[in-house]
Structures are given as structure tokens and as C-alpha cells.
View 1: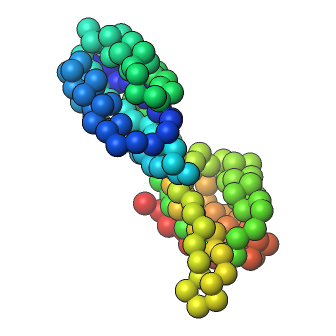
View 2: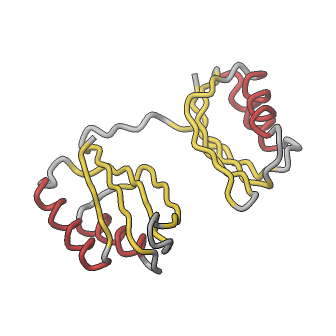
Length: 171
């Protein structure tokens, strides 16, 4: 069995998932995991499929030469091992301003040695004032050696500096 990572990007229209899944299943592929979304009428996604080794090249060729109107990139992958890391989640909310993710990612990368595994962000309206709030949900892998108190201290410091609320917890 081969594991293939597939990224897709293009104009959103009905039937894209059906067409992608048809190509995958016609090559005996198994849709394992995915994260897909539409933003500004553009469809974007990443998915992982398992396919018999004898069908891997054919699947990749059919996907990348398809007439779905999508940019499609495929890469064979091997399972990642994360035994030296712990999973951690951060939820952030605060008044929207330029640079929130840049400042937060700098602390996560250079001070906590974190690897971002997933991120979802959006702008929402505050319920009472109607002001725009920035909201983020971030899934991380942190080195096991990082002390829990250091994580909390760094996040509290950056939250105060950016005037946002940050909630964090190990998953």
C-alpha cells in the first residue's frame, strides 16, 4: 500500500469532491483524511489516500491530468513519527489587527520550538459591540522537553502584548 498526499486548488463548483473521489476509487484508493474549504469562491484542500502500490503511479497521473479545473499536486508519503512531541492546542481571540499570526508564530517557532500541525482562523463580529474579532484555533506539536510553565508564561506574555485572549491545553 502507498500513501499519497494530494493538494487541490481551483474555482469552486458543484461536483468537485465527487469527481476527485471517482478517480481515487477507480484506482482502488481509500480516502483516509482530508481538510477542504471554500474561501472567496476558491476550493482548496489537502487529502491523504492509500492506494495499492501497483496503482499509485496511475492514480497520480489521472489526478494531475484530469480536466477538473483544479491545480492538483501529488506526493508519496511515509507515516510520520511524533514520539518526541506532545500535542497541544491554542485558541486565540481578540480585536483584529495586522500581525497577530506573525507574532504568535514567531514565539511558537523560535521560543517554544513548536510545529504547527493545523490552523483555522476567521474574523467574527463581537456579539455586543459589533467590532471585528480575530479568532484562531491552532494545533501544535511541542517537544516533550518543553516545560508546561514555560509554555503558559510565553503565551501569557504574547497575549498581553497583543491584547488578545489565549487559551491553551495539552491534547
